[in-house]
Image 1 (tube, protein in one colour):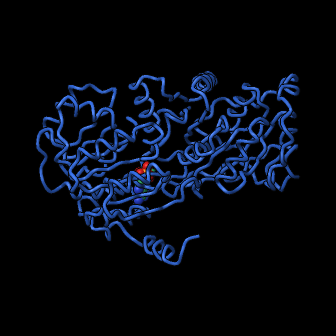
Image 2 (cartoon, protein in one colour):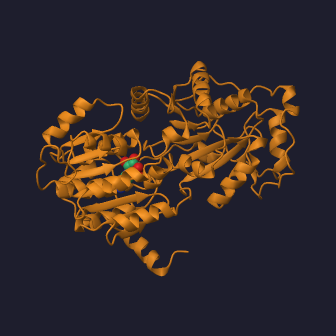
Image 3 (cartoon, helix red, strand yellow):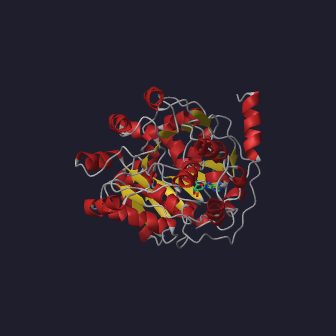
Length: 474
Ligand code: AMP
């Protein structure tokens, strides 16, 4: 429960403007041309503290605007002074190459009125080119821990000039086994530095790290860990577990919803490829993203998706976690994630920075226990809806666990999405499916979630276009 002071703080930050935060006119201009009107709560709280020189402990997930909460004041501070060869003035540690690349693009956007040198030290990019940049002197060095230590051990880099250090996505670093590297790097950087530390969750190992390496930090918590954003409408569709039926259900959903662009999550890499190939075969504009793909292919795919050239990104959890892809209208869970936290991360890809978004989870009778864990974690039931024209077996699956239907929302017949391939309805489920799912332990009936839209109706919220802020890049 938020206390009285928390409420007051929230109230206060709600009315802040960017111009109240102590940023220079050049930065305010860059923020304006990025299309942002008001600072998000983490920006309103972190920016003045960073400018004051305080250490910051930000407990925030991606989607809250946390990247700008450190990049903006860093640009402000680094605009005074010059970099020396091989002695970066600031260091940002990111767990993955994609995240490092993403942060560098934030610097380009917000730093367009400043002449700051930036270098990326990430795997998959040539050492030579990175060295040339370091030689010229960099104000902002963005790195993954392994590549940074490689350069350091080769004697190509000195860390004694670092005045500001950012550790981003610390809990993800923990998942990836980077904590010893982080500890080593922290010890190589002057004690007098300013440290900005961000994590979506605070497990004990992360807490210990912050106790050792942060000095009297300002603690900013903007969203409770493991909660989904309220601006994302979450629904559930139940189908039989035959992969073909799941793919047909997905196509039907893609065709009938107002999908501008979407990330479709699968639990296994091989399904990422399979679903991607199948969607492409059916005429959808789709591409796959997973860890086995070559770095250059991953970067190219991501760029294509960001630029709007690719409309559907089929991804695995590891490849997509933490990625900031603005303006994703829909997230589809082709598979229910087996770790409930992954559900929260997946859903976090849409409804970013206050925008509305939709998430649709395709579930089978086998997913009951995972769904239960997810609903416990997010603290609410996920609304069950029906697929229009769903095969009878699917409807039976739905009705097993559902209550009688409510009057369904209106449906716009001629609304079509620009990702839609030629329409087709879900093929009838083969008879053998009836015997396929092994009978499970007696299931608890799903909570009182009402079924809406039985028959050929589509919920109204899914037909509503996503509203974008002015100037937002699509
Ligand atoms: P992040 O949490 O840093 O990954 O940011 C999530 C998304 O929010 C990014 O697409 C940003 O461009 C966007 N964003 C950041 N700050 C704001 C803001 N003040 N107003 C609107 N969008 C923002």
